Amino acid sequence: MAAVGVRSLRRRAGAAGIPLSAEALDDRQTHVLRPVPVSDGWQERVREKLAASERAFLVAEKGQEEIHFRWRPGRGKQSVWGSMSFDAPSGDVVLGLRDGEGLLGVAGLGKGSSFAAVCQIAGATGLESGSARV
Image (tube, rainbow, N blue to C red; front, side, top):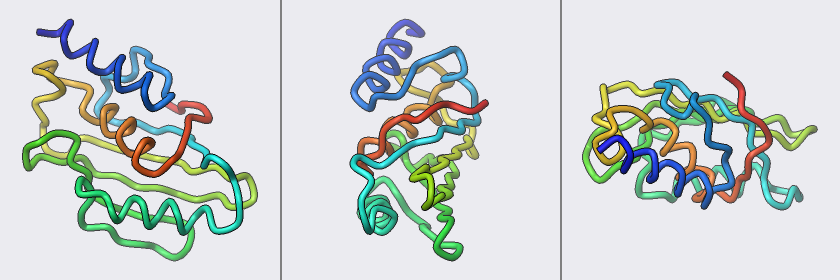
């Protein structure tokens, strides 16, 4: 079962361009992402894509620099807490996620739901990996 979960995370990470590491199993994830390409209005496009996703709910903006939301990484009702902070001058987006509901995990793995959500959010918003912060 665990091998299936690791393969699932590896596949998701590869598709999203997010590096897979041992920290992928942590309940808390913080990643620096960048829009592709960086152009005028990129922050609004990322916000719109996040809010338009059927996996996102309770999306609340805190000014122009930050968004808080919930994200469903699986098919069930469980979700992770998320936030995005925008640094317009550098073009960086700091994505922070944490497991708030004791998720069962990806394919029975028991962990990795927050990392799966990072990959899904990157794909849904058109962001790519800058670097991971632990």
